[in-house]
Image 1 (cartoon, rainbow, N blue to C red):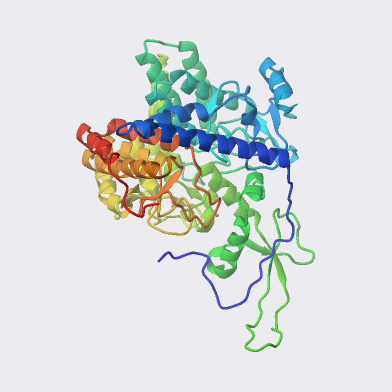
Image 2 (cartoon, one colour):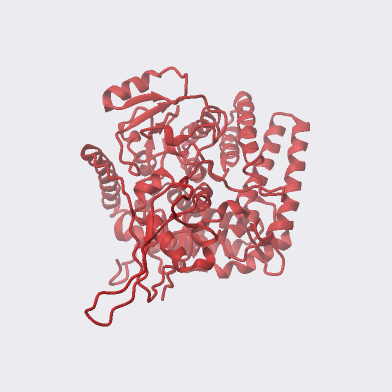
Amino acid sequence: MRKSPLCAKTICVTVSKMFRRSLQLTSRKWMISAIVCAFLTQTAAIAQASSPAKGLKPILDYIGTAWDTLTRSMTDCQSLVDPKIRVSPVLYLPAGMAEPPAVHRLASECNVRVEHLPVEIHHLGELDTSKIQPHGLLYLENKYVVPGGRFNEMYGWDSYFIVRGLLRAHRLELARGMVDNFFFEIENYGAMLNANRTYYLTRSQPPFLSSMFVDVYDALLKSGHKDPAWLAKAYADLEKDYEMWNREPHRAGDTGLSRYYDFGEGPPAEAVQDETGFYRKVATYFFFHPAQADNYIQENLAGAEKSIAGSFYSQQVCDVPATMARAECEKRREFKLSSDYYKGDRSMRESGFDVSFRFGPFGAATHHYAPVCLNSLLYKTEKDLEQISRWLDHIADAEKWSKRAEERKKLITRFLWDEKSGWFFDYNLQTGERSSYRYATTFYPLWAGLATPEQAKAVARNLSALDHPGGVAMSADDTGAQWDLPYGWGNIEMLVIDGLRRYGFKADADRVSYEFLSMIAENFRRDGNIREKYNVITRSSESHVELGYQMNVVGFGWTNAAFLELLHGLPKDMTERLEREQEQLLPAGSK
């Protein structure tokens, strides 16, 4: 039986939201519905039309067509639609940029406002996004692939996995264009963004960009093409983005490591409108778990400072009446979630793992941790910059990056490696101790190549703690959050399996690959869709997420990529077995 963190109590508590913004735009709702329905209709039709074909052809046809279905550009009206924010579409150009002809046509054909950002942006945090009204799409030069559903923009870490899928599908030009879009973001918006919407100008996402570039450039070299000018441009932009993570406020105390940190304040705009009731659930949890609240709840007292953003919530304790008599109640008290809570919530979103209890309940302490994932990625960035320096024949720079990588590797072992348990754990900056939360990011050091053979062997021994019939779950704890047990995500399956293969654990890598691939294929046979996450215990696409947005989005960029990549790495006999499975009838009663 699932243990929900929102457990019931015998005292009576009323939690009411004191204000709510509701903006209904009928024409906009129609446009969003049309996009979603069109995608579902097209992909379901592809699956149905392909059903007489044998083996894996139907699902591979779906993925092949989805790359185009999920592609957006500045010449496409549906690119402007934001299912998360109920406002009329606006396209923002960088300050001072001349309006491209394609944008002029877009404005005319799609009835879209075109505006310029009020100032030039050199670094994240320079612009108060609350003063940009209404929010809108940030211009990018090239086509890009979106994850799908409510995610109708180009996302930071999603794009690494999408790019790998595009390269596997021989879509090099599209993959390169996406990398160039990120360089455009760094040069015009201050960093690789969470995604290209104005409300994301306060945060980045896990820094996979150097990995993206190296993979694309390696594919370019294999096709017989060198591009020294692009190489030099990449070096400059990647170095700028890297340095953001190595200065305040992204430094993790005095550890020498880095942390996630969103520059914004208060509840993020996209969560307020799109994640119905989420912050009310957070407040309820902390009412009932005061030992874990850690100043995340602040009472609204007369004369108190009013600077805390977000909604008011109320609490009232009443007797439970045994008769028809009116219950006696204490005076109603008003609360808000604190500024520190919202800083952690926003930083959790920069991490990509929203929502998980890995950084405390609801990820509220994310900005108080030095995470395994982020610092493994920065090690990988340092190694990638070393490689780019060698391609450029800049030997002194290559040696500098090699030294930085070795220094970070030592710090990761010192602060994040727990030799006794054989896990890489996040480091709590407030307590000065490692966490004990078992999480799939323990495989990041293997993927990045920084783990010693002994560390990799210990991590691989612990695979059983996360391994299930449908693949690797995010954590060993069922919290009701989508980035915890029982859910598995294609992007993390890719990293886990890459890490296992890198250190020679081929049998484990093959087995986990097969578990995940067969689960996706089985669910595809049921409904003709690929989704963002799966329940790896029940091997189902049905999700019962209690915290955060609750849908299981169809599309889906990184799951499509995971299917192609894991299938490519599977031994021939296991591939043939997977093919044969697609000819079998689904179990009776399966949904």
